[in-house]
Length: 372
Ligand code: BGC
Image (cartoon, rainbow, N blue to C red; front, top):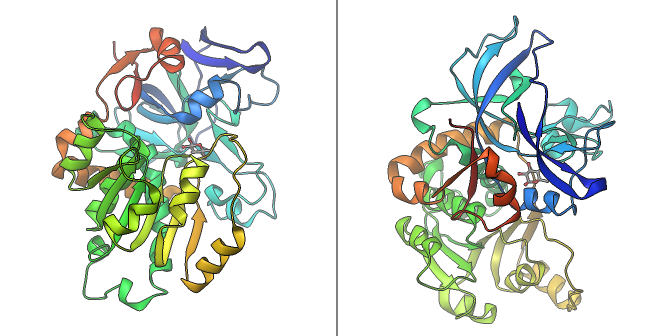
């Protein structure tokens, strides 16, 4: 079968032929892969700046934003049957007894960093025609979401952020109104999304679905399909080329929440200076190595203390976040079908995957499709 692999020692990315995997344990499931999305992490792996092959292998099969169809199940698998569509989680637990998070099934909060990530770190990924995985890592997706379900994994980033956000919002009584349903907890609050890539736009959809007044701040200028998506979901778009960070507060008012999805440290830092009183700042982008940033940390810390601000980083996602992403994608699909579809303008067959990953993306998100 075909797969896309990175050979870090030879600095090569190529289509390879591999043996089709087989079920060897009763709790396993065999999947025929349907689609795999490509993100910045894949690009970094393919430029040899990130990613680790499994122990004993000189290559890593990439791909972690996956959608597969069940073709066979092991004898102990009860919740899946052939024909089901599933999205796998990315991370697998570390082996250490003392890692409380992994032992509790929350490897997205692994304490040792010895967890593996399929397609990223120490385990082959999903950019292969067939994959075998344990049933407990597979989340069923309704068939009518097939065309957009490859967005589940990137949406889990926003879901995990939100999972952590609500307890933080509760520290300040008026944020959480018991009279208002959880779905509308953003009402009356301003959120700023940094970056208009798929993670930023999906995060903005999640915020709009919770009724946050949402602004997206990114470098694109009109006309641009990202700006059209922003408008379609009821968010306001601000171009960083037209509005400097120093004028953000004057333009949008006090910022209650920043959802950073740009992976650009200098921009992230400048926008942190614009965070409002009692504000919460969520960092999701993994910045590459950038030039040294000079900053007045004393002034920053002083502001953070005097304004009760919270900054937190979040990576990966747990089972709860995958279920939440599947439910939310259903909502987005009902409310903004064209905007969701616009993120996935084009599909690339596996034979052209390497050119697509190394070259220019197809639309907002590149998707490799195994459809015949
Ligand atoms: C993936 C996460 C992963 C992170 C760090 C992201 O692109 O979506 O699952 O934990 O990279 O490797």
